[in-house]
Image (cartoon, rainbow, N blue to C red; front, top):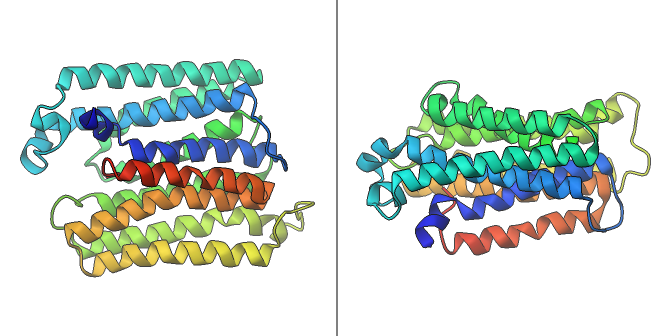
Length: 306
């Protein structure tokens, strides 16, 4: 069972839930905590299945490399057969498409189904063709953007230009994480790690456009739960802590330091999602999203997130 939990990257599934839930909330904009409608739950299920299927398929495609570099992992160690893993990956990806289609029916719009199908295609491209390619981080970032868009389309959005800065910014941020993580199992080189940290910083700055862009367009959002200046300070503090840790790993790129920086950057996705929800819905829903951090930390005690 622990081998399966490790293969599925169980701690990271909490970040998939956070993305889809945050995407829905930012478009729907509820102030009070109430049970979300079916479309939201279907979108969350779709993103979780797609993420889980994607990481399992990634290990299936990389099994030959892992036999040389990471023989302790579930597939090269023989704890799980490659055939069983491939079957589970296919089933999970299919379930993700089905859940996205159910979200489309629930919200009476084709967009969740189209986004879900695109997400599945992007995952397949990354695992089969782009893992070691130069454009791999771009595809991985696109997968994270599509996870956000699946939640947003389940609420009938995006409905405003500034909402698009979130999936765009988080795509760049995750592309940066992918750059940092490329050689985390061995001896990383300083330049790619530092470059990845810079890309992460750019993505976080772009995502902040969700708050400052309406102000620049003289279209301030009515009833904003948190003052813009206060929100930007909070976002800046969290963003700086993430990027500085990645940059510090780049200055001394040992496997332990790089893996810790990558794990921190992945875990911080939940905190970043909560802060974005804070700007749209206020403290109550932000706390709900932040509670997913507990699931990540608990899962990390069982299996590593990277």
